[in-house]
Image 1 (cartoon, helix red, strand yellow):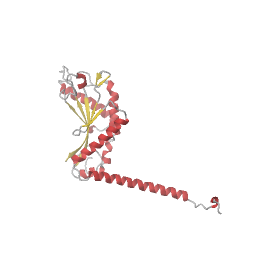
Image 2 (cartoon, helix red, strand yellow):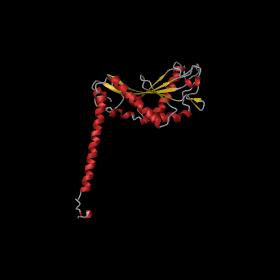
Image 3 (tube, helix red, strand yellow):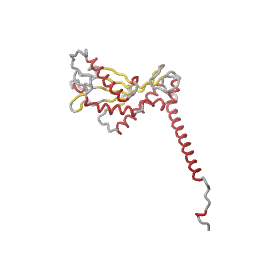
Image 4 (cartoon, one colour):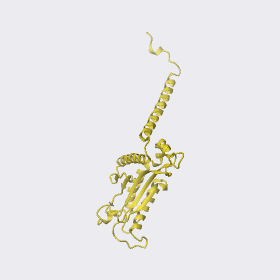
Length: 244
């Protein structure tokens, strides 16, 4: 009977096995990446730019809900509006005060921690990497002169009370200035390109609740919408043949 300790050991056998495992792992990773790429292509093969943007918005909204849950951001109201993308509603009141004081467009400091968390959520979405994530489809659409556009839209609102201010002529101007204050804050916190942002002011014409509840209607809403612009270049960089 031959003892196991006298069995010959081939030199380099351990190294060869290790190299084989590395090669196998690399091959498996490549195959997995190819399967993911094929699934993306199959999912979006032959779709119109409108349908493509709708599907991307759905996926982004799912990521938003996941990040909201992970960050325990129960204070944030999120809604998939479909027509305008994901809607983010900042709390109406904090410690009994509203986001904006009457006749003012500067942000109440009590709300800054919430806006910082919201900016962090936008950063975690990795919006700049969308061109890489959907590169095969975007390259196809780019040949049709369709461009992807990321739109972070801030909408400002006011209460129904007339204002008497040297700075703002009416609630239209005041609500627009409020949107601009939030836009600037989010842009600085996220570091996202300016062309990702847009704004609008609606005065008192889109009340959140009863028009008599003045403080709750002095607010700002943020929308994240992924759009495909027909015959135009978008603001997402990185795809040859267009400004994507």
